[in-house]
Amino acid sequence: MKPTDIIDMAALPEKRAVSEKGLNSAAIKPGQCMKRDFILCSAARVFNRDGFQGASIDLIASEAGVSRQTIYNHYRDKEALLAAVVEDALARMSASMFAVLATFPQTGDNLEHDLVAFSIRMSRNCIYDSSGAFLRKILQANETNLPLAASICNTKGPAQAIPAIAARLARLAMDGHLHVDDPDLAARHFMALINADTHYHILTGQCLDDAIIEKSAVNGVRTFLRAFGRR
Image 1 (spheres, one colour):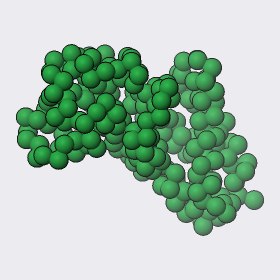
Image 2: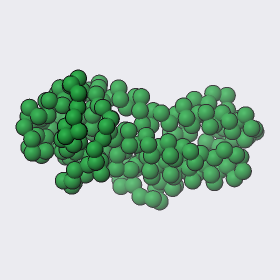
Image 3: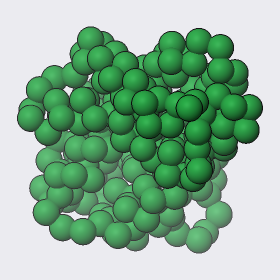
């Protein structure tokens, strides 16, 4: 169980040994790890429900059944707590993302079909899963800048996908299956194109379903191959 999976539930997640930004420098004992995870779960629910501005340490403490001081023993302020929740969601998104990246097509045989299948897996398992939806809601809906959380997003999660995809596109180009002068630019275009339709539906307040994700992947890959396909 993880914080972003229990926004609507009250279960305790498994222990984690990963440190988070905003933690006090004192050594963390096993019991503290469990309490910290419970705080993260409760914070995820409150941030998801009320947003950063509407959330407060008092609300989170009440949700977690702990004192304000207990939260401050782990996190220096509300932004540090949000950053820890964001980092947790991104870490889990990254794990899914790298598993999907391992399925990126390595040959030009049936390239369009394989790129579409890859794009659908990336969207379903990484970008538009529960962690992705939670992150978009938290980071896009706030009226104030959140530099600590934003800095984490700039280095983890989807930000790590671009260089990984660029390297794979470069290999396909070297083998003559694509025409790519700038792999990083091609990777950014690839990610933008396969998500173009889904982003439009999100911006217009429509719910995503498998049909929309699949259509976005097909249209994006076909457009990408028209621009970067073998000539």
